[in-house]
Image (cartoon, rainbow, N blue to C red; front, top):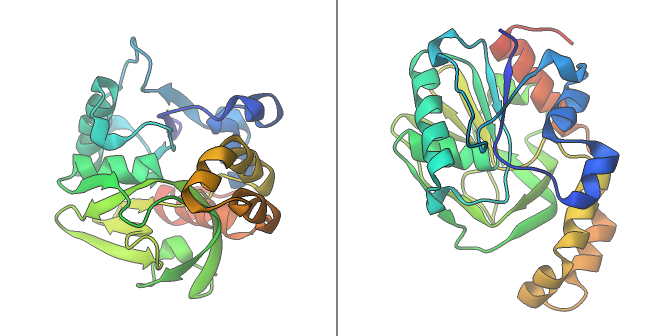
Length: 239
């Protein structure tokens, strides 16, 4: 089976026409055709989840939902991911996927006590891992989230952090990796998200904050590098 793209949400409407759905974002940064991923929208009422042990790999997307809301589709998806993890399936969770895997495997996700993190952010690697091959110890990433992993699941290791979010990346066993930031984003996408949330950002952090964050966003090579590292070292696939 092709690697599954487990879709837990959709892009803001302004981006769907220009960037497509999340499967297109991941494929673009991986350097793959979109049909190399098997789309599974777990938010659909009639979503059919395959035998977790028979899956070759999973990418879990971000979402505007919150894991701690425990929506039925999310709880079901988390249980399925726990089965895939137990079977040794390579999994990469991104943002919501990062938090969902933490929750499903015995940790806890909730509102980030340091508030919203959005824009071009610096991430510091705490422990070297194949996921970060070729990256400097401190690297830039594109980010947008208000929730975070608050308690690690048993056996998890923090791979990266920064001042605002203590768990920016995790290793959970040999084949599951998660990141809080968005390696599938490009600068255009993040600027659109900032523009869509500008009123909230300015209300939280003061007038003009959204404009400053918007102006600072640039494309960075770390997103494609991390996704391709996962594909090469965990899925065992080339470009």
